[in-house]
Image (cartoon, rainbow, N blue to C red):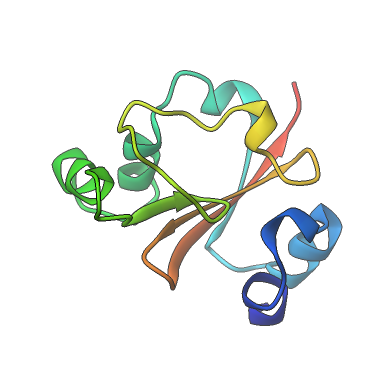
Length: 110
């Protein structure tokens, strides 16, 4: 699992490899695109246990904190969402708090 996420550039990941590596791991979340639509990254971080509150998520997002990232891209706006163009291999989004805490979203297209 760590080989898949920590030794590869995110854009080079393949959805099938990540699904195989994370099978049975609670950090892998499968959902439909419509479940992401309209949800800010700060809300997703709370919903999936990366932070305890939206206020904490917003503090991590403030300039120069770089505490939350999506696919290794720093989140700079608490209202930002994961959109289709963010998805790796058309299906993956890796939401991280710091360097180790993460949720891997596998997004099924509607």
